[in-house]
Amino acid sequence: MITLITGGVKSGKTAHALKLCDAYTGKTYVATAEAFDEAMQTKIDLHKAERDASWVTIEEPVSLHSVFDNAQEQDVILIDCITMWLNNLIYKQLNTEKHIEHFLVRLAECGKPVVLVTNETGLGVMPANPDACRFADELGKLNTKLAAMSDEVIFMISSIPLTIKGAKK
Amino acid sequence: MITLITGGVKSGKTAHALKLCDAYTGKTYVATAEAFDEAMQTKIDLHKAERDASWVTIEEPVSLHSVFDNAQEQDVILIDCITMWLNNLIYKQLNTEKHIEHFLVRLAECGKPVVLVTNETGLGVMPANPDACRFADELGKLNTKLAAMSDEVIFMISSIPLTIKGAKK
Amino acid sequence: MITLITGGVKSGKTAHALKLCDAYTGKTYVATAEAFDEAMQTKIDLHKAERDASWVTIEEPVSLHSVFDNAQEQDVILIDCITMWLNNLIYKQLNTEKHIEHFLVRLAECGKPVVLVTNETGLGVMPANPDACRFADELGKLNTKLAAMSDEVIFMISSIPLTIKGAKK
Image (cartoon, rainbow over all chains, first blue to last red; front, side, top):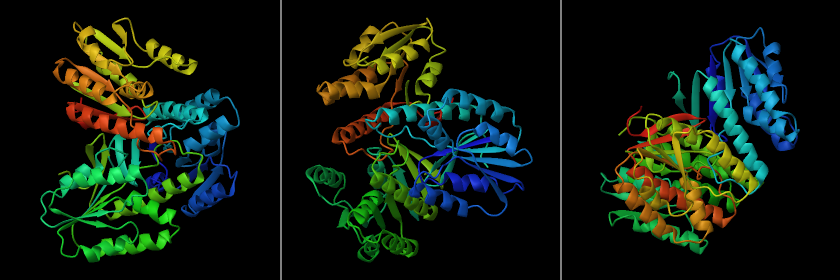
């Protein structure tokens, strides 16, 4: 069971993802963000404060496929978020395509509930910056792949979940 | 009864809000925009031309809580828009948090139909400008609070209303 | 029967539009993009590769009304995309309003299945650039007109089609 939660900034994606995991006992939270500045550190700390003691946290900014090894004994895996992971891959000039492929293979075969958080970034006027355009393109293509593999896709608007694929809960 | 109408620029938010108020007699339109340049004045004038004589207009760019006093005798209050109000609070370096809290308290207790217009601004690539990022964050958080309080939330796409919370009309 | 497909960049709009035309025999693909740089040429070539031999391609960046003459014998017309057409009109400083009006008249009277692809560009923070703001405004207004004329409007999110007007297929 794979659930993809997508939406804009501050649209309640993480809060909804955490809520979907409530019923499970062994919960792994995979944080992909790196604290490269103070604003990001504050954001990470705020997100941490949202999670209670039932969560185990793994920080994995790059080798996202490896979390399926590390979370073997867990009942549910929440990955937050795909956007930041893709950003890290591009920023560090790694082989984005290979990393994505590796992750998708492991995701497909993992056989346990996974909740993925991502962003929609292609619904505004594109900035003049070509890197921004490339990023939106790459993320759009990755989201397409993830949504196709997901049993349920939820689009968050003002923290209201809109189920666009799969059964409504 | 609180209705929140959200969406992008030129997505028909105001036109739909006006339509939702058609059935009422005493109608108050609260304009939060200030004409700080010619383009904005044109926009305000165009919006004014969309409203017939049955509307009373209040211009209130900052102290939005006060409109519940001024519109006491009215049957419906349309606030257009939350985005511009938040923009004014931030631009004038006022105590945003306090203003929002004050407004939300009055909104919760007002007991009459209120239609709120807001924007989604978090679905594009974030500009490099940190103020833009802060604005999208603040608006996302405010929209979450408003949507939670609303009986109905409508997302406008190309002027097609999509009801994402509450009963369809 | 007019179908409008809207959404962000890389949200699967073209792929879904092509799929909707599968059942027809005589298929015309109207490309509005001009290869003004290498990145655009690559994009055009990629789109071409998505179409099989059953498609006739017309390249028409400006006089979009004329495609209804050229595609007279066809069973279905796919116009990809409205966004690029509007961009061309504005960039070439043509009479945008007149071109749009001309196109809408011909579209309304054409009497055959037409699939239109467009973009949502108003759901992000507006760039400081006034041309970008004008573009998002103009496109929002044009999308409103097209959606009002369409029998079906589909909003693409991560390549998941969400029917927001008309019957689900």
